[in-house]
Image (tube, rainbow, N blue to C red; front, side):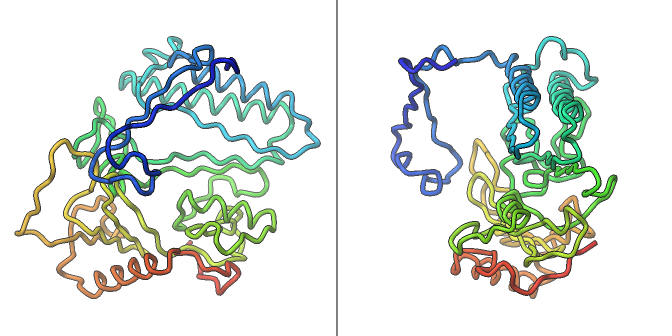
Length: 329
């Protein structure tokens, strides 16, 4: 619906530092406030967006030439705020509008999967469903995010913007009949940056050395087959405020005393506590017991690994066909 004579214009944040790109802006607990002007014909009402996106996606699939390959990227706003579901979903959940918005997302996914079935494309289509971060209740430090009695991140500590598992661990659900084993699970370590290397691996394309510096293929895990490339055994996470964490196997080191998420007030340094946090996620998925002082060798090993990634500017090998790490099943 965009009128070419009334284009959408982004107005920048004029505060010092915001003239830089995302990677070089200040990371001190606030973000750039970008404004929007123009494009009035293309503006939408929040309550209509999920219905609109679903209708567009389903319609596109129905009209698609089944003889041609396709890629559909459907980026929902559900369940990002503001929480405004279509009226038909209001009151459908026991936990309020947050649950209503989830129900609308669930409906939308079902409509897309049904469209693939009706077009007889399901067996030839790989579907991946995931999210970019954990859920959030409100932007302030919170160990366990709960909405009307529902633990939105399960047992995980923290929420969106935190470096704790509740901020960075998300669902990844795959469907590809006769290729992805039904009801199967895999505990491989995966990041969303791995999509690039995985798709390249699937299509037999060699990525340039300077592309996907932190991308590993998880095609072997997806298809329950031996990996053809080096697989991920470590992962770097960062928080909204720029606090870093690194995980290797079940061990996770956080280079700070808290989650590094959004906070209205600076969190003071506590000299009575260790300077960092170390957790064994295999035994303590809740990140409840900090064993930083009990395992100095692990702290040193993980710190050195993070420094090596920093110095080399990458965590993935330049030659992705290098020696493969065995996957944990």
